Image (cartoon, rainbow, N blue to C red; front, side, top):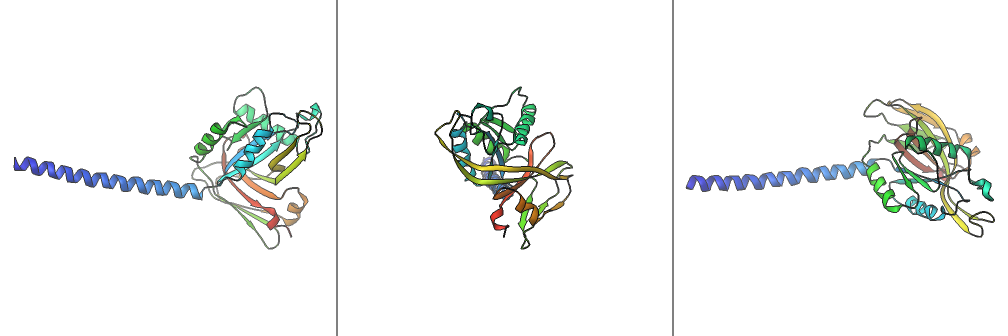
Length: 258
């Protein structure tokens, strides 16, 4: 009987120790996960929009909210295929429409539409669907991340340093110039009479290099920066087929340009 009680006491004691160890392991894991989330680059949220689209203003406003969210790089890509209905969007560019077309193939859609939001190249949804967007942002934070560092130089140059990947990979290095805010009075078209606010409006999108899984350093000259429109810039890695974004970083150019 004493042996049985002793055995039960030992098992109870061991169970308490095991439970404490389990809690310690879980807490360490949560701290590490939180630390990794803090260190990773921002989640890129792309809004495909147009000032000529009557259903876009709510999505534009939502992107403005996301632009203030820590850990999110929210960008407005204005497309040009709505320009024919009476209002020519001053920020629309064919390259933005082309980029959205490429996404339509990735997501197996036979059409493009506005407002559409693409989250880190991994998921897409209607630009005003808050629940789906926020869920996709959380999901994207679990994806592998390649650290990118942007550093301004006293000369005005922009130094870009991209870390090596954990696994062999290949991607294009994209540079984006964007403006934080534009407010436009619409005089014609579906939004006639409205004043629309657009946030982080992409002015230039260009490929500046190729990353092949190893450390990469690139430099953007001060002259190159000054010649382009845009008060801020972002760099991200993505393959040519417009799959998931592998890493991103952003910086305000006002601190670079003299």
